Every structure is written in C-alpha cells, then in structure tokens.
Length: 197
Image (cartoon, rainbow, N blue to C red; front, side, top):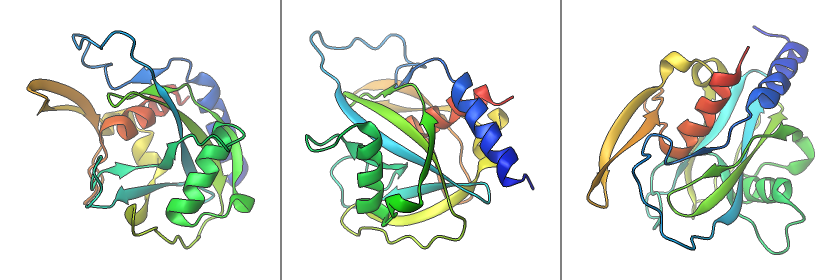
C-alpha cells in the first residue's frame, strides 16, 4: 500500500498531466450540436480517501435526470458560490454530508462538457479514511468507494454503446462489482488514468 505522501504526490502529478478537456462527444464526433449552445457551469468533487479509494454516489432512482447512475457528488454552480471549488464542496456537503473542514483540495482537472449542456469542473481532493457519509435521500441512494487502483488502470475501461435520441452513442465504462461506472464519470476518471506516470 502507498504511503500518504506517495499517494498525494502521485495524485498531484496526475492532475498536472491531465492537459486536455474531455466531453461526452469524444467518442461521438458526428454529433451536431445546436448553434448558440450555452454551457452551464458545474463542479464535482473527486474525493479520494487517504487509504486510496474514490468516493462515488448512486443517484436516487426517482430523479428526473440520470436516475440510478453512478456519479461524483456535485452539481450546478449557484449564484452565491464564490467559485467552482465552493460549488463542489457545497454539493458534497448537501449530497453526502461531507464536512468541508476535512477536505484537502489538491487541484482542478480540465472541464468536461456534457450532452446536457453543462461544463463540469472536477475538483480533486483528499479526505480522511473511514468517514461515514450521510446520503441525502432526495438525491442519493447510496455512497460507496472504489479502489483508486481500479479507476486509474486504463485496461479496466471499455467502450460500449446505447441508443440515445434515435442514434447509437458510444461511451466509456469501467464497471466495478455491482456498480456500472459510465458516461461522464467514467470519462473524467479515464482522463486521470491516462495521465498517471
């Protein structure tokens, strides 16, 4: 197992090495986007425990958008947010009860553009091991962790497809046990996997 110093150093180098922004269209270059499309700013918190796990959520099944999907804690920037880091921290506190006081921000990844017209900025941070999370039942069905080694291994990703709005759409997936990690979450993590040295 890596020491905390080695883990932190590896993550900081990885953040520096992710130079390219990503999008839901990386594997779908033929998608024609509407003219005048305006992206809404949002942020997610990639919380990594000191024991080397990534904190993820399973979105509530009753939600209108992305029900039951695996995601980072996060959401749209509010007018009252100072910056996107505060957006990620606020959303993590609201969705999984994560106290901002225990979060050590390591850095920011390039934004990810979604098919739903969001520009998501991933904030990478360390949190203590063994935290107990409190999912907000209106938004989150479950909070769980996945080993960082799984999501930082490019061989664990595969390209899959499904029909969306009448067209076949391709995306990355990195399933782990009962959890189907795919879409924007998998694409953001794959960007980190590609940057590990």
